[in-house]
Length: 166
Image (cartoon, rainbow, N blue to C red; front, side, top):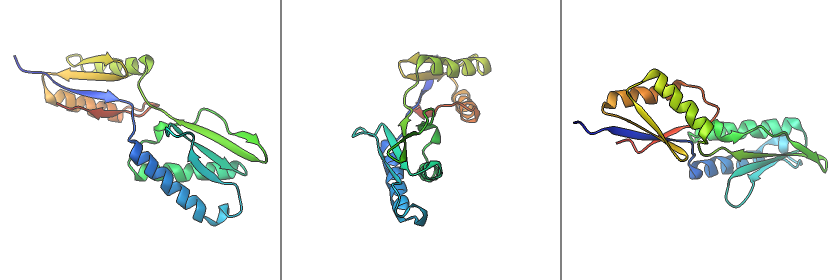
């Protein structure tokens, strides 16, 4: 019997790349003419770097800073889906403050959505939910490659990455 090949599906991000993107964004914000003399800033929410806080004088500044951050994340090859933009900016002290947390981990609902898609399209492939990741195994490597292509083409509201391809 042939040995099964497998790979893992995770929802994670490379912290070094995210840190690099945030630092590049901070440099651009400090050099932009339209932000001179304003409270516009971008910083990590806490020491663990689980999110960012955007501060601006008005909604235009907030949107501009978010646009800068998204461009820098794309330049560092990080999915923009890691940004949780579900909360609204909070006004206070003549400025707007917006906390964006980073999305990390597959909960049961997200994992079931992914495994259902795999089972519907590739019944011979075996997806298994293991905590915050999904192990996908099959005797044929071609099927695993096809599953990867299917998942890349699918539009999930959360980022997915493939690891441990064996």
